[in-house]
Every structure is written in structure tokens, then in C-alpha cells.
Image (cartoon, rainbow, N blue to C red):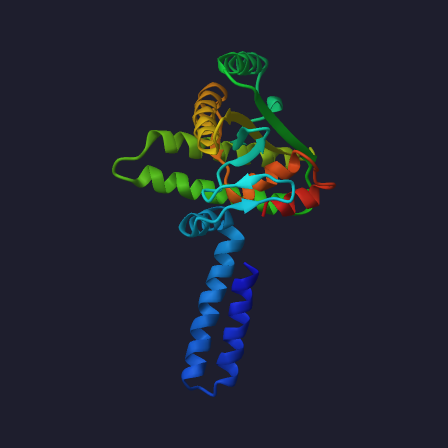
Amino acid sequence: MYVSIGLAFLGALFAMIGGGGIFSMIGGIAAGIGGLLGILFSRYGYIMIPLITKGTKTIMITDTGYEIPPSQDVIVKESQGIYYASAFLGIKIFESASEKSSEENVLYNESFERAISNLRNVTKIAYLLYVEDIGEKRKTIEAKRAEAQLRLAREREKPEPDVLRIDKYEREVALWDLQLNKLVKGIKPMGVIAYAMTTATGVSKEGAIAGVKVQANELKSILANSLNVEIEWLTADEMLKCFEWERILPTSPQELEESMV
């Protein structure tokens, strides 16, 4: 991202001092490319970085000896001839316990117990909780609610709408409506970031990676079906954030929110 910003700056400089000639044109093109890449890396680094590392077959090594393969979707560690590979899954929760009835909470707990009983491997499910700042929260919720309503309307207008997507977008709109109602009532919003972690071993690096991918896909299916949540495989920066949170947590809600931008 910083290289892209530097390219944009140099391109703009060349464009200004080029006197309107070929150097100005080259500088303008470089500035445009650098600016575009800077935006892409800052907003979609979890997609861009794996594409680059896959193409260049780049392997990253952390200062603690953990290895991140070119796909950037797992983290590997070798210890005494045994390889350990870990994968992280993001959990998007659309409802809280306070928004459910007593009967719904009982059913949800039963679903959670069934999900846990179906797990065949050790699994870590982590929740990062914090009280959000009300100041800008309402504007953010209203913007996200409008986006969800727009996606819902577009899906409904299609000749053959996807029933699953409509259900997903309806739940998103309902979620933002509930959060807005809470703010109106003066209830402080509670933020939550949830993710799951699973680890597999193997006598080779490839074996450990293949094993953890099988485990993660099973875990993804179990959690999504049992808990009615959306699960996504975390890669690149998003995966590394969860890995870092295993050791040190953000010290304030602001720091946590900034790390998720």
C-alpha cells in the first residue's frame, strides 16, 4: 500500500514538472495506477496480497518462526519434526441473545450444543467484546441499513431472485433496525468480533495444510448450519489479525475498530 502511495506521489510530481509533454502523461498514468493500487491494497488487502504471493510463490516467515504459505489462508509451524497448521474462520452474528425470546434462546443453546457435539477436533471460538462509541454509531448503522435495503430490493427485482440471499438481506435489515431502536432507547451498543480457530498436524507441511483445510471446511459447515450464522475463511491481513489477537488484544475499542478498517 505504501509503495503504491509513493508511486502515486512520484507520478503526480512528474506530471506537474513535465511541462505538458510525454513525462507529464507518464506521470499522470503512474499517479492514477498508484492511487488505484493504494485504494485496493488498503481496502482489499486480504484479496490482493494472496493473489500476489501465489503468483510469485512467496512464503512469509514471522519473527516467531511461523510460516505463511503463498495462499495466505493458513499458518504453519514445525516442532520436533511435526508440522502444525492453523486456519481461522470469521463468524458474522446477526442476532444477540437480548434480541431473542426465552424460547428462541433455549433453541439456540440447543443448536450450539449440537454443533459442539459434532466437532471431531479441538476448536477455539473467540469473542472480542467492547462498548461502542455512540457518537458516529448511528450514522454508520443508518448507512449500512440503507445498503442492506438496497441489496434486498435489487435481489427482489431480479427475474429469478435467490431465496437464500433474500433471507440473508432481510436478516441484515432487521439487525440494523434493532440496533437503531436500541440507540433511540439510549442503550449503549455492544460490539462483538467472533472467529473460530482449528489446527491439524502432519509429518509434512503439505499434509498438515491439507488436514486443516478439511477440518476448517467441516467446522464452517457445522457452525453455519447449527448456529444460523455466516462463516467466511479468513486470509492474509484478516487471518494475521486473529493470530496476533491470540497473543495481545487491542487496548481500546477505538484501536480494535481501527484494526478492522
